[in-house]
Every structure is written in C-alpha cells, then in structure tokens.
Length: 154
Image (tube, rainbow, N blue to C red):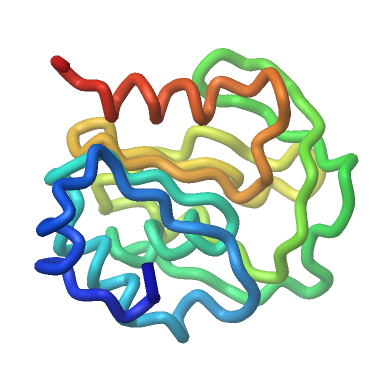
C-alpha cells in the first residue's frame, strides 16, 4: 500500500498482519508511516525490516541517528539477546535506532550488531510488533514467527 494510506483504509482490508518494508533514506521523513504504526500497534501483528524496523522504533518513542558509515554487505554478525545465537546477515542501511532511547519505551532490544553494538532487533511482545535492521536470511525464524502471529487462534 502507499506510504500515506490511512489507518482506516488499512483496517477496512481486515489484515492478518502488517509488514513495514525496507527502503532508502531517513526514517524520520516518513511521518505518515510512523503515525500509522502508532495507530495500528496492538490491533494486528506488525513487523518491520530495515527502514520498517527504524519506523517501528520511532513509533514507540525511540530515536534514530545517521550512522557515520552505515552497514553494507553480507558479513555483519548479529547476536540474538533472546537465545545467544550468532548469525551473519545482509545489511544495507545508513540509519540506526539509538539503544539508549529504547529505555522508557515499550520496546525490548532483541538483537545487537557484534561489531559496533548497534540495535539490530526490537520487539513489543504485548502488541505483537517486532523488527530487525538486517535482511532475514534463509533459516531465520523471523517470517515463521510473523506467520504464526497472523494465524492467531484461527
């Protein structure tokens, strides 16, 4: 759907879930999508990748910043704070969520970049909202979890 679709239009479609996609640029420049996530959080599962992850962070009150060099390429090691696993992921972004700004929000940091400790994953379990900065790879449970959440009690 276009970035400026209203929450009412989205909910008319009775979505099982919402995927906030990746894209270029400063996440603060897409205020309509930030407001959309603020309005729809808790109404259905929401996931975000890359820019979508950053938008989720902003919707919950976290801050983002422009990185000095950004992350580019396929060899970025990411540690899960949930289970301690370490995986390499493809990344292509120049903005990140400020880890300190997550404090005081409903978000929990779930993944960190091993090299520079940038936030790579966030979640709000209460609202079934989560995101990752990296592009989930084959064998990742990221999309499986989203499908499970969308199925709900069906």
